[in-house]
Image (cartoon, rainbow, N blue to C red):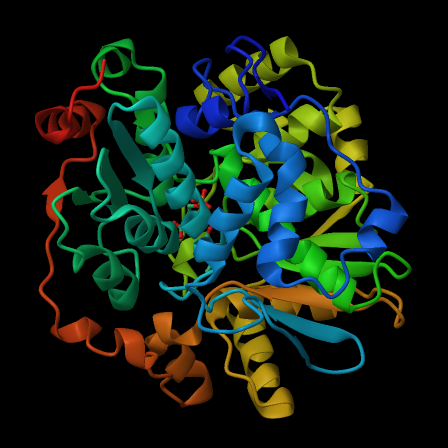
Length: 466
Ligand SMILES: Cc1ncc(COP(=O)(O)O)c(C=O)c1O
Ligand SMILES: N[C@@H](CCOP(=O)(O)O)C(=O)O
C-alpha cells in the first residue's frame, strides 16, 4: 500500500514511512493511494472475531508489507490487551433504535486510546528497525494528550512535546497528562485555543530548520495510522447489528474530523453505512460546511465539551480531497487560500460527494443537557458531554425506524465530573486504576503561544536525529 499527500507534492511513502512522517512535507495529510475493499462474503466472515483479530484483519491491507501478519497480530494483541473491557469497545442498547458504542475502556478513558495504544507500538517497532530518535509534537484539547503520553512515556528513542490550551481542558484531563513524570514527556500549557496549538504543531512539519535537526512525527489524527486503527470499531459495531446484510448509522461527536473520517473509510472499504452524523457543539464550522458549503472559522467558544472546541478540523482536508476528485494541486491552492482568509466555500463536487454519506447537527448547551438527562433518566446511563452531543444528533437525525443508530461514546463521564454533575446531580467517580489522580505530583511548563518560543523550547530539549 502506498500513501499520497492531499496536497500532491510530498514523496509517496509506504505505511512505515507515512506513520513515521506524521504530516506530509508539503503540509498535506497522507492517505492511501486507493481504498482497499472487502467483499460482502469477507465482511460476513469477520462476525464473531475477537477485537484484536478483527483489528489485524482490517488493518492488514493498509499496513501492506511494512509488517508481517504475525507482527501485526502481535501488536494488536498487545495494544488491545490493555483495555479494561473484554470486548474492548462494548455496544449497549438504549432503545429500539439508539445504541451506544463505548470507546473509553482504555488506559486514559477516551476513544483516543484505541488508536494511540497501537501507534505507540508501531513507533517502537519501526524505530527498532531504523534506529534514530523521534521527536513527537502534538496538540490536544484534552484527550489526545494523555492517550499519546500513556502510549510513549518511558519509551527509548522518543520524546513527546504536548501542547494544551491553558485553562481550557478539564482538571482530570490536565492531570492525566501532567502527572506522567517520565523524562521523555514534556507538557506545555500555551495561551490560546486548540486551533492555535495545532497550527504551531503543523508549522513545525514544514519548518526546514526544525526538520534539519529533528525527526519530527505526529500523534494527532493527522497521522494516518491513527485513523486506520479507528476504522476497526465501526466494523465491530456494524457486524453486531447485522452487517453486511443490514446497514447502520453512526453519530459521531466531532472536532478534528478524525473519528468520523474513520467511518467514511470503513464505508469505502465496503461496510454498509446508512449515514454518518457529524455532531458538533456551538463551534459548528463542520455543521455549516456540510449544511451550506460554508467552511469559515470564527473564534473558538469554550464549552462543557472542551475536546470539541475546535474550529479548524484537520481531517476535513482528507474528505475534501477524496470527495473532490483527488486533485492535489487544487487541494493545495484551496488550503493555502483558507490558511490566509480562514474561510472557504466547498466546491459543488466536494459538497455532493460529502452529502452521499454525511449529515450533521449542532447541539447547544441545552441540547447537550437534554440528551445527557435522557440517557440518565430513560436508559440509566451516565454519559459525558461529548457523547451527549452525539446522542442529541442521533435522536434528531430522523432516520427510518429500522436503521440502528450508534452514538460513539468518546469519553468516560468521570473525565468531566463538573459538567456531568451540573446536569444530572451525580458526580461520576474515577475508575480505581486512576483513583489517585488528584494526589499525584504535576509537572508542566507555561510557554508563550508564539511559534518562536515553542521551537526554542523544543530545540533545547529534543534529541537531534539528523
Ligand atoms: C471526548 C472527545 N469526543 C470527541 C472528540 C472529537 O473527535 P475528532 O477530533 O476525531 O473529531 C474528541 C477529540 O478529538 C474528544 O476528545
Ligand atoms: N479532541 C482532541 C483534539 C485533537 O484531535 P486528534 O484526534 O487530531 O488528536 C483532543 O482531545 O486532544
